[in-house]
Length: 180
Image 1 (cartoon, rainbow, N blue to C red):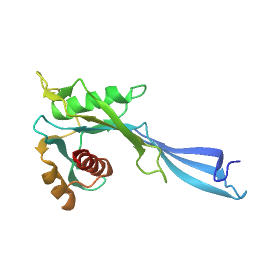
Image 2 (image 1 turned 90 degrees about the horizontal axis):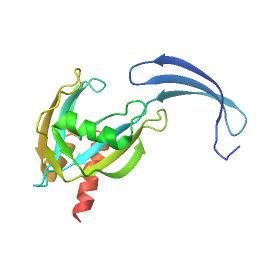
Image 3 (image 1 turned 60 degrees about the vertical axis):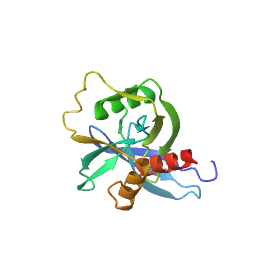
């Protein structure tokens, strides 16, 4: 057994929903004792740092029920079964913002909450966006407002906690470092 590895000897699925699955794993710890781990299984997601030719960041504002408030975020969404992250990033950019691009560059990927969830988010960047000829229909249960902000405006919204999520905070840091 590796130094910190926990071996699962039983998994009980408590809930399977449209987006997540909740499992309770019974594990053997490195010292031989046992414990339980509550785990959220998620198919993964993408996020897109998109800037206009004028250098403005494209963001969307939407209501987030888990937080009971609206926040401003970079465009993002869940991977569909078998979907490649880059294709998902293009789809989400188009659906949420009405912009498209031919140039998406993978920046990084990260786990959102590795203590209890396996969600992996792939972050892409583009500074070559253009409005789509025909505006797409978004998801039927998703209501978003598109906005374009300067980096300074976005940083102020982060200070005001209107931008209050990790992927968008990462995007702002990425753009700040890119300017240097």
